[in-house]
Amino acid sequence: MSAPSGAMRERVRIAIQKSGRLAEPARALLSSCGLSWRESRDRLFCHGDSTPIDLLLVRDDDIPGLLAEGTCDLGIVGRNVLLERASGYGTGEVPPFREWRGLGFGACRLALAVPQAWSDSQAAALDGLRIATSYPALVSQWLKERGIAADVVTLSGSVEIAPRLGTADLICDIVSSGATLAANQLRATDIVLDSEAVLAGPVAPFGDARAEIAGLFLRRLDAVLGLRDSKLLMFQTDSANVPALMALLPDAERPTVMQVDGTDRVALQAVCRGTVTWQRLEDLKRAGADALLVLPVERMLA
Ligand code: PRT
Ligand code: ZN
Image (tube, rainbow, N blue to C red; front, side, top):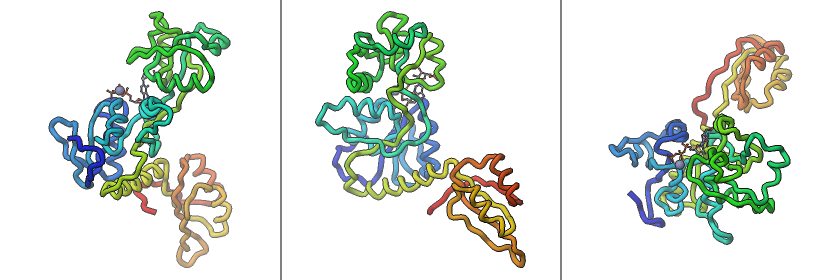
């Protein structure tokens, strides 16, 4: 399955989480980029059907290492996992991977959390305290940048119970809704990192056929990401109303205005990048638009 790094390759391998929070959204995103795969029986490797892009299904924590050793070319992983591994490289060493794109799902924060009973001043004086975390490199770097001399206690799981067990005074963990912290009588204080799923890839460009394949994939990905909230807006109006209506559509891209035969009415269509709410439609109607239609945009190749 693995190829020695540096070997010439004619296919691109993308590592994604096998199961877990990022598994389904990652697959859905890749599918919307037109990728499809033949499922293999062990489901660790899926051969790309329509494009020379294969999938490697792995644990999220393994993705930075697989990128570093060249076993995979690209990966979809939480920024928290990617940067934790990158922070582990010593000064003067450059990690061979980096974030290529933020993907807009899997949003969470790596945050310090203290027992709810602590006062704000207690939570602000961390010198000499013990912080339990699964992200020792990121937390150590954050403490160092602020000149705080706290001890980092590395735990691989169940970080949130460490203060109750007495193995640490506070924690630094991934928070999304905050329900887990609340259930453990903890409250978040500082945010160490804002995270989401990211596309990670090598720092150096590919020197073989993978460059073209990855380029094609990135163009499709950017189109998909750019269209996420986009809608095609269509309406008719008297031509005199067009300037006032355009002022209500600052996010409309290159609108097309067509004369309706034999009248001074026009039909207008534009892709809007922002959300087209009922409120916006009502504002447009008041400014003279009628026959308003809002349609989803599936693909766009500019
Ligand atoms: O098996 P594998 O190692 O691949 O999966 P995993 O269990 O290590 O990872 P997984 O699937 O739990 O998370 C994958 C990625 O999802 C993480 O690296 C983050 O980038 C992202 N993510 C987004 C989260 C959360 N939200 C999240 N809430 N990862 C973990 N959590 C945990 C959090 O630590 C807390 O304990 O979920 C719990 C509930 O969170 P609250 O705040 O909603 O209660
Ligand atoms: Zn994991």
